[in-house]
Amino acid sequence: MARSRWIYTDVLRVAAVIGVVLIHLTAPVIGIRGDIGDIRYWWTAHIINAAFRWSVPVFVMISGMLLLAPGRNESAMVFYRRRLGKLLPLFVLWSIIYYLWDIRNGPGSFEWGQFAAGLIKGTLHYHLWYVYMIVLLYLITPLVRVLVRRAPLSAVFYTAAAGLAFSNLSTLAGWKSWGFVIEASSMPGYIGYFLLGYVLSKVELSKGKRGLLYGIGLISYLAIVGGSHWLLTMNSSENMYFYKYTSVPVIFTAVAVFVGVKQFGFRTASAGGPRLLSFMSSSVFHIYLSHVLIMEWLYERRPWDIIHGNPLEYVPVAAALIVSLSLLLNLVWRGSLYAWKEIFKLAARIYEERESIRPLRDIYQYREMLRNLVLKDLRTRYKGSALGFLWTFMNPLLMLGVYAAVFSFIMKADIPHFPLFILVALLPWNFFSQSVTGGARSLLNHAELMKKVYFPREVIPLSVIGSNLVNYLLTLIILVPALWLSGIPFASTLSAFPLILLVQTLLILPIVMLTALGTVYLRDLEHIVNVIMVVWFYLTPVLFPLSLIPDSFRWIFDYNPMTPIISSYRDIFLYGQWPDFGLLLPMLLVLIVINAGVLAVFSLLQKHVVEEI
Image 1: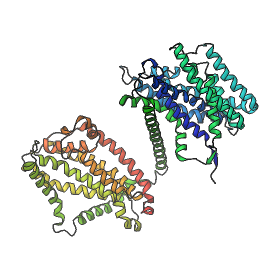
Image 2: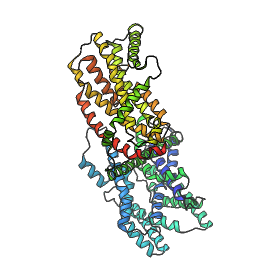
Image 3: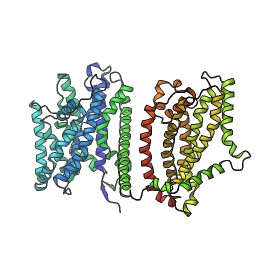
Image 4: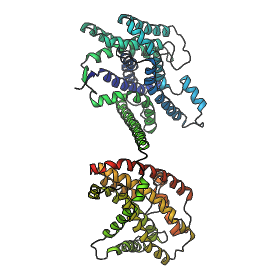
């Protein structure tokens, strides 16, 4: 039976993080009241901002409620390892991101000394102050737990009230900060919220007390709105006391919201709760860290008019976009972590079973079977046709004739020997495309053979590559005479052909291996691969030179691994030039490593292929 749990904390978390987004969206308007075109727009932003000042205090109260719960019996070291071990790496990562974001348009570069100093002082970005406050609360949590368990609930409440009172008195007295990102006068107040969250989670107020509390909360909200306006009217540079998270009005609004959500039916749910609510609640910290960066990025690309614009029009749209993109970013982050975790698990399995994974040795032992499968595929490719094996030569001859007719008489191209320009690229592309599309279904096509006889399954996709490789080499019998008849001289650069062919074959091999294995578990992958190959064809310079690609789209072709291969074939066949070895040799080294890894993975996972077919 699914365990029930409280979900009002999830509701509070999600509402609070949306409130923080709304605070940051409306905050720029508050400080430029004199520049706002319509004073009503300023009041709109001010009312929205004041309505969510409780957001950060509620975050702290939820932390106190959960971390100080009696069931937490972990030691201080375990607590620090679990909490700080997760928080600090994420905090440092986002500190680097915000630091890079802030210096991206400046003349300077990343300086580790400046970054370290800003990280220690808390001056890297204004938005990160909350993390410093949470870290300080985590550091004292084990000690606070001991005090909470030994003291009566009333004593905990009075301690919380004392901390909040101290923050207010020190602020009103004008005590200066200690030069850190968090004001010295504010920290006792946040500790007070931390304790208050625990207290409010333990007590149940009567209906009359709740009604009184809601009334005080409403009055406190009006005090925030009116008091802040009064301070700005008296002195525009005045530090806005009513906006402070530890001010008296904010305290009462935060308590009223916390108690109200707790009592308003958000009580229990089955384990996990509503999926969207649970996902958003678990993503709150990531949303908090990322939303300011996304807000600034959106504003740079489509700025909303904070001087003449109505906040009721742009704030809801911008807030929805920011929260959605933050959730998407968190989803990508989780997916990346999951992928790395699975990669490490797979690597561990490969290491544990390294003695039983000998793909190259097994393939060599079954080399005769591989040869027979290649010959079988070549014999049956045109079986039943009148010309039979001659179609291997007829296809490139017919293509050459079509291209010669079209581009010589109908669409006259400015490129010399344009039909051969296309044919030199199209033949290796066919080798690539036919190997991938044919290899995707290769294991399924040999299901009966695999059920009857044991042999290394790598032999089957390798046979598909082998037969297409032989077919490609045979088509050179047509290409070479065509080049000679067109007056294109043969140069010593043709000696680079084996290297280019090796690079292309090593590129094909891992793709075929993975698609063949994946299609066994996901049959739709075969059709997905066909669609991808069509798109890939038009993203490869087969029918056109790279010089025709606009600079804004050139990066797509630069990242296409088939682009340097096609260009290399044209260099040696058409232009008598040596290929770009500075690009091919690194590709060769990388592909050797990739192939070794893919062969090991295939050898490990192929053991269960027969069960899935």
